[in-house]
Length: 78
Image (tube, rainbow, N blue to C red):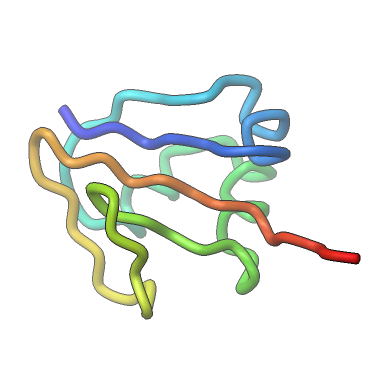
């Protein structure tokens, strides 16, 4: 299994802080989620970190067993 981790307000949207998923292409994993959650996660301002490393691009992500993909919400400052 792989693991999705939802941080900040994304955890509120997901109703949980993490979720175990079958490994595979991220687009297939997102297609299996609640539609509203998938839309929130696909926001261009949401950043992704794979196994603790921030990803510069989000295209062509394929999770393998043991991977952790974290979704980081947009940050606003003041």
